[in-house]
Length: 238
Image (cartoon, rainbow, N blue to C red; front, side):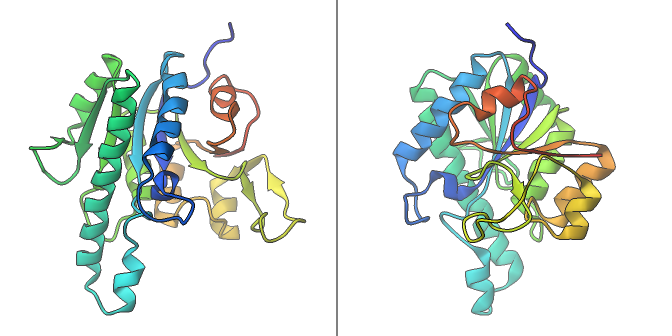
């Protein structure tokens, strides 16, 4: 059996990955499908931390366009990520995978507060750690939270799960001539303004040499193949 290239990963999921086909709300069957994919790599011996967004429940831009205070809109988004984290927790535990939800905003009746050393200990005990509420600060996205936590827990790679098979120079759904990149540097992503993660997250990964792998989570074999070091998706590195 081939050796794993990445043994500890941070998986960044969008909130839309849990949504119904409309792109909004929580579809439990979608959570269960993601849970099955995570279970497969957990059974390979991979330590997994998950950061999840909230675009299926709340988009801060909607509030900002109506004059809402930015910090208020961001805190609402953080609360929405906790709902998504609990949905994923439930799907995984019903499938036999032990998890721990940790949040950057304290809400002790439903989740642990995020503590770096405790999160690492959960990984060592074979639990999947799901992180909610972003960084706990307004003005920072869940992309930035994913980059920050990847560094803190000593991940080998940050995996950005999408519904396309990598990074393209244009939207492949709109432009059939879009070109896919197999590899990019951090500077290329910033200079080309490619839609990988926000610039703060990219800069943080660049400063700390954290590789970012963008792949299609809905491809049945992509995630497992990538963890064994096969060429899958797009790798962003130094």
